[in-house]
Length: 271
Image (cartoon, rainbow, N blue to C red; front, side, top):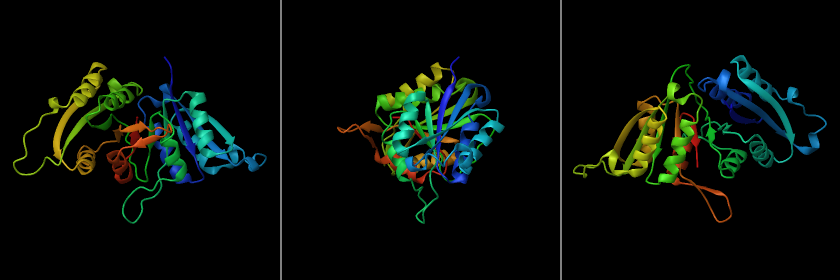
């Protein structure tokens, strides 16, 4: 059985690095089925002065993971942070990158550093932004999977969840479709079964033994997604909605952007 490979690039913020490590250590069967590379990228001109052991945030993240029984590879690379993170992800053929969001601004949105933004728009691998606030529980993981009408996106979201370590035993999923602005008095009735992408995602997960709740509601999409995550105390939100532009950069849909910036829990972008 192949191990689930996770790349955790850290900067000098120890609290952020700890949140990244906490998130990964909460993976189902993390101590037996997950391998993590903690990566710190230093400037080329610091190549003679920076070793992994001298970077407090990197050491803290690696120690936290190892204390949970997770196998850790400690690495330092030198150069452009974005380029080296992407190169490492490709070399490792990692299943997921886990990045840290910054503190909330006065308007209660997660602030994303330039490196984080550039990484998640430059890779087609799943990327999780841990955010500034997290409560990770040592129990069955509850995930919210909001879909749109794009069956390819929904398929990638479902595949990400199904590929998590021992997902059938340890993950429960709410597949959610929000009919935009259909929450006014007299709005026409809608059902989950009307949305092929939602049905496909739910069917795929159930075929892999994952427990699925099927939900269709109407309203303002981002607000309903965030409310559903809160109501279900979801451990994470798994979003699709990335697509490549003509210059081979990923374009992030407006709903995914709004959820990423506003959620108070980890958000995964699958592609």
